[in-house]
Amino acid sequence: MAASVYNIPIKTIDGAETTLNQYQGKVLLIVNVASKCGLTPQYEGLEQLYKDKKAEGLEILGFPANNFLAQEPGSDEEIQQFCSLNYQVDFPLFSKISVAGEDKHPLYQALTAAIPDRTGEGPWKKDLIDYGLTPNEPPEVLWNFEKFLVNKQGEIVARFAPDIKADDARIVDAVNAELAK
Image (cartoon, rainbow, N blue to C red; front, side, top):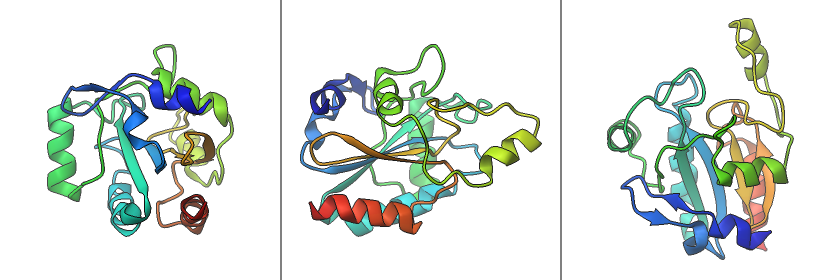
């Protein structure tokens, strides 16, 4: 299991082929991100959590995705520029991928298969329905900014709904618990 998450081919936002292998021994918070979403301001909280916990071994990994109402239409270069200019994002960003549907990236296939249900689903799902949208049902990713926590061994240990912010006690406590192991 651990090896499968670490060895899945991905690309950095600069287009370099890589894997998550370089993050072995770190706690990972993997987030599908988007620049034109109502949840986009979550970049601020994610960056703050990264600054607060990076020295202890946390890595936040952002995977831009255009799956939800085309809210990430830009190129990798445009995404990187947006994140840097608007949110001073310093955590690693990767090349845009699909996180749901038929063309779901193998990383997200592994994440959603490992933990099919989201923790802490708040009003976001109801809001999507109220807007006339049909939200994805588990195990699919509901929307932008869903978060997956991976322990130091590469095992997926938690999954948080999109409307759970990075400073929410449920995320902070789960991250701290994994960092302490």
